[in-house]
Length: 568
Image 1 (cartoon, helix red, strand yellow):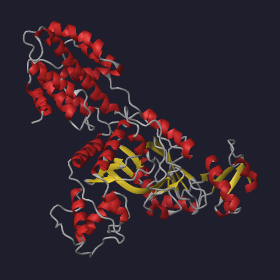
Image 2 (cartoon, one colour; image 1 turned 90 degrees about the vertical axis):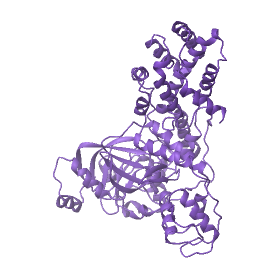
Image 3 (tube, helix red, strand yellow; image 1 turned 90 degrees about the horizontal axis):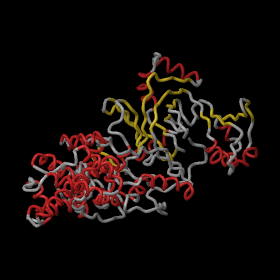
Image 4 (cartoon, one colour; image 1 turned 45 degrees about the vertical axis):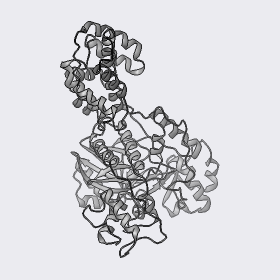
């Protein structure tokens, strides 16, 4: 057995009775050791802990054995320390070893006991801080996101709720009562998502090495036989649970393998073909460590959120291109969503849906007038008429030409006209929009271009989110209105083609999030880091961060020119 393991075994069997050493001596050394050995943001918290205990040891002695062992287990538990941070554990083990083997002189024992107790306290506080705040420099992340505007003309917004250190009284109460596990568990953010990610992390850390799949020009598909690489594909998919454990490992591409391939393609948002082409081969050959890093980065993101969301809420996960509706912690509805282009990312923030609009008009924002409408009018002077868009100066409708607005293309001055697309089948918002008024002018809505929802990467908007089943979402939200809206009433409103607002009596929270790894239906899902936020986060870890971020020249997803038009 390695020495380190022996040291940690000693932690659990050592009772640390003081023997001939007086408690007063240890208390005296604790006072001085706090001043000489503890620095930084944890010092005041540690001082408060010992002040509340009368400077008595918090972890040592027979009466504290259960609590002490609970802390030592917690420091090693991936549920709390998923990055396996040392938190002074080697130093703690060394002090235990010295005391166990009587290598400390009698004159120094009180000082060593004090130092050991203090080190355990410091480790506890550091663990608490990691659970709540993590080790990502979120201010640096924000700085890098802001810098994208200048470097790549990308306005990236993520409203982050960086948490303060937990309430001091509750931390002190946990130490005094010895409820270490319960207290630490109470701090876990986004608990259901977090626990699932920790389970995934454990699974991937213990997975065997992925076999290498050779690249071929022709995809491997149903009916292929006597192909050695098919055997490797089966082994690879069996490791991650797509191919059944009891299914044969051979060189035949059979129905069972085809289903396993489809399962994998869905989890990774690949083209669902049932065939193993070059793209899928690339993903299959990504090493386990890449998946582990992705899981860790997504665990880091949970630090920005509360323990749970509300009893009823809408969640839009941008990299997954999906909207989910939850009620009482149950998934009630799921649908596809088109999100912002990678050069016009959908902002990440929390809000509440306040009302719905049937037969909506769409007022084109000043930013989109300059970026999209002016260039379009230059190429197609009849674009406004063709797309049922009216221009206004104040309340007066006016005829606007390209020449009238061209000077504002690169100006900071607002365009002096308001452009409003009228209700109808060609309206970019479709037949219904879901409003949560915000400074970004983004919301959920129907779309006039349903084909975009069938694309693999649904990144075609200028920030708003177009939903696949708007009327299902509308019908669910109608339960939160005071009026009685029958299907006949809704049909009547739609046929009128008149904008109609339906207020919600209770506002429904909406959370726009960015998770590239999650577990659903018992399977791990890995999605592409479309906005490169994961990369920015992984390069902003305190102690080993990069001060700037550069968008790679080659991305898995490239920015393709959109069809000429104005999109919301």
